[in-house]
Amino acid sequence: MLCEETRCDRCISKSVLGDYSINPYIGCQHQCAYCYVPKITKNLDWKSKVKVKTNLHVTLAKELTNPRIKKGSSFFLSSLTDPYQPIESKYGLTSDALQQLFANGMKAIIQTKSPLVLKDLNLLKYNTKNVQVGFTALGLDGSVKDALEPNAPSVDSRIKAMAYLIDRGIYVFAFLGPVIPGWTDVDLEYLLTELRDIGVKELSVDKLRFRPGLKKELTEVMGNFFHGDLEYESQVAYAKVVKKAREFSKENGILFAKPFSY
Ligand code: SF4
Image (cartoon, rainbow, N blue to C red; front, side, top):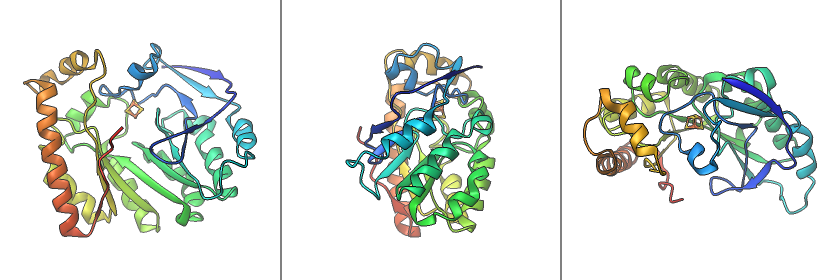
């Protein structure tokens, strides 16, 4: 995947996932087949090029001086990319952003598929009251994962990273989204049990969102393990997963977050 350095004039956006969001990168090396970001951003390079906002640190510092951004505001990293995709190990933009946010009294909600977040363990440990780390975990079958999330770390490695963070006092939530029929609904009981056993405090679930063109692409990729009407079956699977995850959370003292409505 190509990498291109770029500059940004602004880096903070309003968000429904927190008060604000920050996206250090444009494009995502994880290249998930169900990712609808290329569709909503109309970025044709999404799966072939990642752009690195090399001046993010300076832009963020400037924007954080805006008095309208109150101390204690929550920042979601990241709404349109994975903040710990592999290139983060070279550029460290997410680490820089977190340092600035915490230094300015802000909160961070991180969502990733990567144990690379552990490189910021010290930073997270010193800011446990101001951070939550979410991991996407959709199913335990590795062959399905390889088809749908070809360049993302294994689900097993994510669960280990979650456990590691939890053991060090960091609030960790699991994100079961988008629910994939034939994967998430099949492994659900095992997945929920694993998440409970490592001490996950919160679960949230999201549906598969069919942006134009995505259904056809996804149906092809899923051909080896799923046969049926993807749109209909994904609704059935989503209802099943929400019901089960809600009941399981109640029985096990886990917070079940309201499903996303955007
Ligand atoms: S990790 Fe998230 S942003 Fe990256 S390709 Fe997958 S779904 Fe898209």
